[in-house]
Length: 530
Image (cartoon, rainbow, N blue to C red; front, side):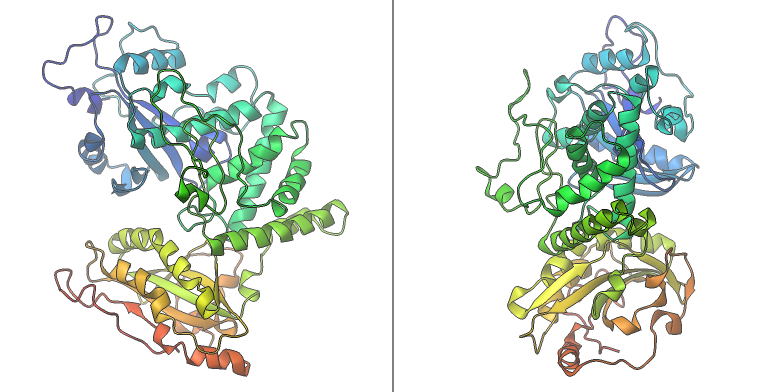
């Protein structure tokens, strides 16, 4: 309540019908807005600000306010992201906060009052209105865990962002508000009755849990995130409005096990801008060669339509296709009584399906160093996955979208695994060229300091760390005997030849130099495989 008025420019004239500047609105979206969040999920929120508040204010003075708040921890502003975001925890709840600035204050006041039921002349705000995290994310918590009807259906809608919100917005703000607009569309599609909405939500919860269990849930790693899965479920739901959740789940896997990618998934066909809105770039593979290269287009339903899954690469699509096919066959067995429902959410067997794995270990000597270093390395892992996918050398990559967090000798460690398969013609594979771009990227990070480290090691299946086979991953103190099974490896001659000739892969991202050193982005040390 104190932040926005403090940013009012000199000689700012208030509208005649109010005594206070127009405050920002705070709107939830994502899994929280849809009512399918888990207890440990992030809460996605949009700050919809009046014209006198800028994005620079958001990432400077607002961040300073958060720093000074004792309830806030793990504060991590990412102003350079494609959709700029402030990540933090408040009262133990993880929050991702994004920003958009509307074209005029009157629009924001009118729509805020429609939501609250206040009149345009009512005074809002106050000098000491800090509130709790529940105040920050809105008061729809009571409705999240129930089926909606009557007033509850209206309550979950929050402030309605119609097409007029796009008037005067820059491109970054358009991307930001579309998260809320897509959530609105999904709710309005599914929420025509409490029973239908419950079926939609239950199906989406099941699909998301299946994706997590099978290492397919991560937009940043080139798989699918929450909005992607929600659009796919909604596509099936729209065509089977009265089907129960069990049937919707069966139809979901059958549909997408047979989908002909890159044929796009669309919920609507809106291509022209609404009245009063400038023309904005929309997803169009016929006119945009970049759009034509997308492998798994899942198109957002609100103008301007965008491909929400542009990050998906060939290795990720291959894994998603495989898992869709397996799940579809499994669901046929469930319906015929040959399998039980829990088989869909059991151990997926990824770490039993391949013979060779690349383990990437991101390390920080303390939590303060680990968190930003981990975030940076994670955000660039798609470069590594794409580099390892090398038809010319006969290598296929199978990434697994999960991090395993451990402690080793006091260090904070996150392990990420990519399974590797080789063509029959592969005899000698030099991995250094395949991983060099990723290693150069992380070694060149300007904010890297001593205590931030990254290593890569080839691990045979029978020497994988024991924690990858656990159903859940506690934060445990790891030792060398636990991390690597020291039983003698048994490889056939072909695999032994390939592994022997991969000795150059044992590269590590160095932390034994100062950030000012000219060697910081130099060629990496080579380590022997163990």
